[in-house]
Length: 222
Image (cartoon, rainbow, N blue to C red; front, top):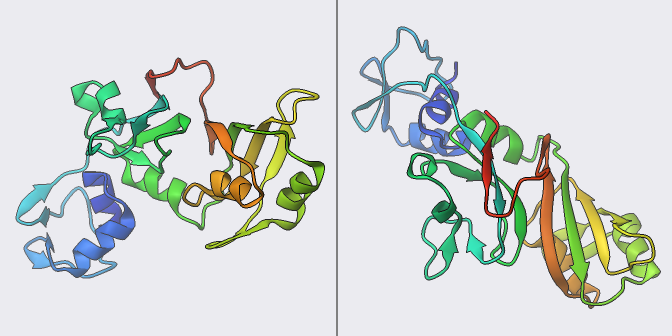
């Protein structure tokens, strides 16, 4: 396998990060500095990072966490509670796949499988994300059409996603389906049209669904 894939699987880092580390000259294969794109035989080759021998885990761990509002997805909360406080010690080495901001809740994936993390976060892979949101006021039909059909111009590009009422007759509660995931994109899109998102909960990420997982709880999926 390629050296960046090996590093991702052995350490949980992303392939992009692995490429940077290889280019820095910190990785050796059988004592020789590894070049970008070098192939590794995981059975016979010895791979080291900063002189520490790396081995592939026999298994990987991936979990779904139902994140409550008020928790951040970083390890250093800088005064805020972190999602790692909700996990047992043996799972606190896992890394998040994407993030939810402090004011949002719902599905967060954590894994030590670098290849999976790469697949789910790289722009070349199309993955559907579904959110349930509530607005501070009813959404006008014109604005719904603008978002779904034409998009709303934000500072980092056009934002477009599909909207579906969660309950007939309720124009404040919506199900959002999208295939992007820029920073606070949903909140910024509605703010540009004069709305405040008062609640935001992610229910699906690619093939993974929150289901009936209780708030603050987690479950293993691999």
